[in-house]
Length: 133
Image (cartoon, rainbow, N blue to C red; front, side, top):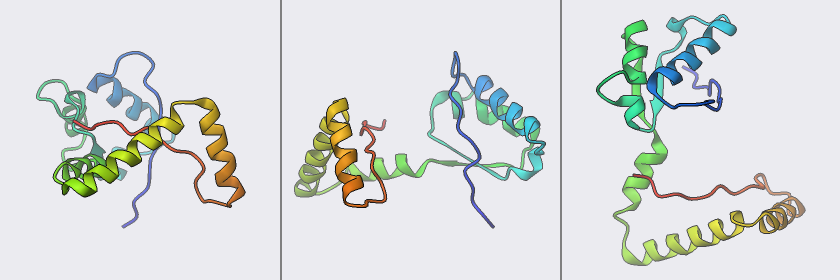
């Protein structure tokens, strides 16, 4: 078994389940891939993805009921982090503040990137931390 990231595209207007489904379907058609090649989908649990009416999951299950759905690991991790001991939670909170401070300024981001490149770091960009519901 091999796990691969399929694609990432911004949604132009709305983010309904039908819109996400149509984008995935267009990608599969464009690259001549059949639905039978898709065995699993990982989502963030948003209502447009796994809601009870006209959601992305329902559209996909209509095409191929054998495709499995999982909840994104990042969101599971965030939920587990809510139960940290107070000392560790305080450290994590400080790290989040520092990351968001760097990302909150274009100058800080450029300086951070330059320092990372100077140290031959594998990664040179930080992402904003946001609370996961």
